[in-house]
Image: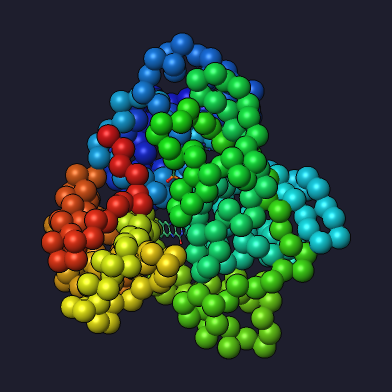
Length: 337
Ligand SMILES: Cc1cc2nc3c(=O)[nH]c(=O)nc-3n(C[C@H](O)[C@H](O)[C@H](O)COP(=O)(O)OP(=O)(O)OC[C@H]3O[C@@H](n4cnc5c(N)ncnc54)[C@H](O)[C@@H]3O)c2cc1C
């Protein structure tokens, strides 16, 4: 177990904000986690479990305990003629899991290549990209109740998945700490190629297979998203808003070219990046903070920014989009502090 006091979180958040936590505790097994949960000091302290911090915005120092898992490992739990079920430790880097599956020829997560972060968080966030979501392969999630210390295995249905959300993000349910996830992958995968320019990118390859899909997706992502080592960021800052068909029809009369994706007969999803771009933010800088020139949905730390400065820019974006379109943007990034 690793325990540090007044510990810098610079390397633990992809915005690279120079904030500190009063305590940092990292456990390597479920037994070590239980020891922390039973500790009286821990119980009385403010606490937050983090992964790689790629979806977090620290507004200031954290006056409590930051918990981090070091539970790793990928093991085969079950194998049939058609599928294989993997049990994966929460601290495994998600993209390493994708690379492992693709190299084995097992499909279902290849479109989720290069999404930053750890596996436990991926299951909480219901990460998604290029027409796939992790919920498509989740069989179950193993977690500890932080209040009762009991272990529970949630079936996929019990995880309550929806767009970038799950029961684990619900502030009204008991706090759970994920230790392992179980995912089922296909030995004869059916590819999902309809999204964005993936199909076009694959035209450059001799054949469509898992390795080529992963390679094409990595190339597209690297060309579109900033390198977090150069410009700290947390990917998409806001979620894509879903609005009523009625609201959409009224807006299309004014903004005919508005991109949209039907969600149901009554609802339409609008790309948040397009809305932000229409408000003139793309490529603009405000002090130490910028709106990425290639994707208006990404807010970047140009160097030396504070969480407050980033939050202020996010707020002016949210307000401008509301004033122009009467659409409320909701942050995908979680504010801490
Ligand atoms: C450049 C970039 C591109 C991105 N692209 C995408 C994308 O295409 N699709 C997408 O869906 N996301 C994307 N993201 C967002 C991010 O990668 C995901 O949200 C990711 O799952 C966060 O993982 P993390 O380990 O960094 O979690 P953190 O940001 O550290 O935490 C996220 C949440 O999970 C909780 N948490 C973490 N681990 C545990 C655990 N073991 N038990 C309980 N709670 C836990 C935290 O408290 C927090 O609420 C992108 C981010 C960046 C920086």
